[in-house]
Image 1 (cartoon, each protein chain N blue to C red):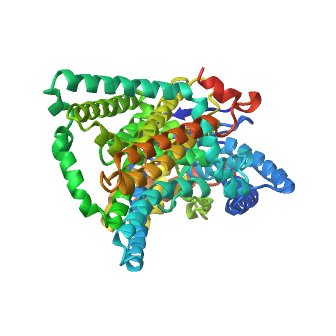
Image 2 (image 1 turned 30 degrees about the vertical axis):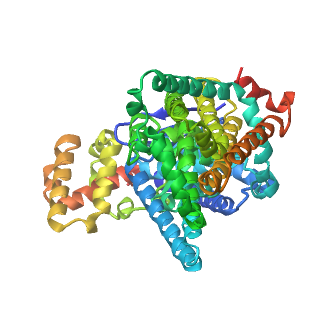
Length: 266
Length: 343
């Protein structure tokens, strides 16, 4: 019914899901680093809880230290295994660490994971943690197109990235009062045709992060981008370009790329 | 690019926000059940948003917008197609108690894998026993710890040491917890090593068998047969079978992975594996308590015959439990799939 196959891309792994209705969507897969951070965070929580319990038990069982040690050892063991399995099972694939690092465990068909799967993938940790520091699991993740450690492969689960997204805002440069580039519709069309999505989002990011960049860096980046556009993509007349700062050049270009698409009307 | 992004965004934004708030409401609902009206609304919004996704996919200049819509579609898809377990299913104590009957049932369904685990362990212990019998030099290689190599010394220590043990329930309690966690970890590893297509499981069982055989022969040779039986049987009666069951779970997992391409009724198979592990963990809790509180007390305090008798009684009870409790034969409909896995 459902056909899922890994998408292939150089920097980020993703899974493409084809739904029964013929809709295709991609799920971004989590890499090693955020998963490691989330795990360390969860480990810290478990250790905190266990040590807290330990103090309590020692306080209560001062006269029976052996039974105190017994309950701590058993509690530590049980909490260590049950923490992730229970939280992932009941909290839709997230532990506290995973929530913090925007990760979620899901079934590899794109559906929420089931309780059995949560237990299986977490009990399999004894294998993935071999021989130390999750070496086996790390190799499993790196060697798998779906970024699965062995526990994930057995349970049929995936870890996806869930960075919070908002509806992208309308940017100021899409509604400029006057954009001098529109006086040259032919060159503007060439710009729009030749710009790859990567280049377009590069320009957009450069403008959007204006205030985050140091003045010197900003000047350099804007100059490089503007020079590249002018010399390689679409050459606007020199008399126009000379009057524009590099920044204004990029704002105009972004206006052409992302703004109202009906150039001729302007 | 034909699409006017701004106008498209303005037009579609209301339905995206509607879908988003509907999804947030559903996801925060613990049982994730849909009302009929909500299901209809969700279906409709999902279809519309999926269509929106198709439109921006071709207009590649809006990667962020595409990601946003993709996320919405993915979430809606998950809500629409997921059949959640009801809350009552998860929290019913009766269902948790089912482990006590489900465990022997699963054990019997997968008896072939148990047989394989027994076979490999027997092979290992025969080899270990023969090696010690015919080549005394093998002792140094096979038995790593000093106390295993020199039974006389060890027995001496044990018998003398028990005065220390007499009033030491505290030490025994701490000791039992360590035994329990250590044994469960080893057993879990044996079960998880099934992912190496059973090779790791087999090696672990074999090594375990060699050790067992070598110790048994070495102690018997030196005339401590009764002592070692009385020492090991009260907890070994549960500990050794539970390691074998861990091997069984490992081989079961290996078998599942080898038929990856087929439909394996994964959900049921996973539950079977988990039930085996849950059951053997409970057995190891008992074994750990026995080892710490009972096995370490020796002859004048507890006569050897009594200890051996207790161990034998445990074995009989365990066999009765594993072979007779729960449904005897898997009923045709429900367990047909799992039963056929083993054939």
